[in-house]
Length: 134
Image (cartoon, rainbow, N blue to C red; front, side):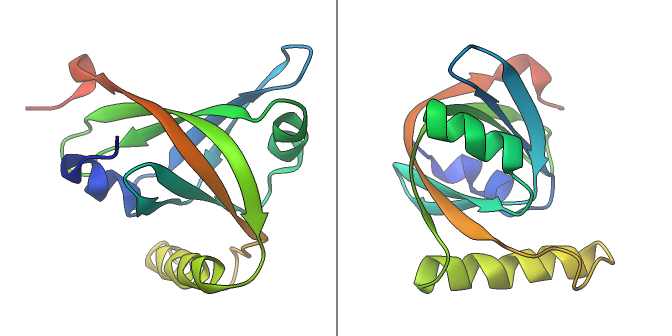
């Protein structure tokens, strides 16, 4: 599912967006700092401020995430299924370190606080070819 050409979009240079829906269909879209590559069929999202997103995922575990390549603006849409949150361990530690690096590059050292690393299964990947720059 996740291809090598997508990996630059998973470095946190350009923020991604996540869309979720509650059980009654009420949508929520928010920016996320980090979509972290776990393996070809899994990603983890940095959970920093996800109160509405978290409620929606508790009711409906499906989400869409938009990825943007930092050099070409090529976009992909990931259809995801939430699996679990991790607040400690190797995945959390790696994401926490990368989030701090992202924050430092943006002049926001110490502002971003990782609450959990939320693990998702990648169900599908769609390309948005018309969004790419030459």
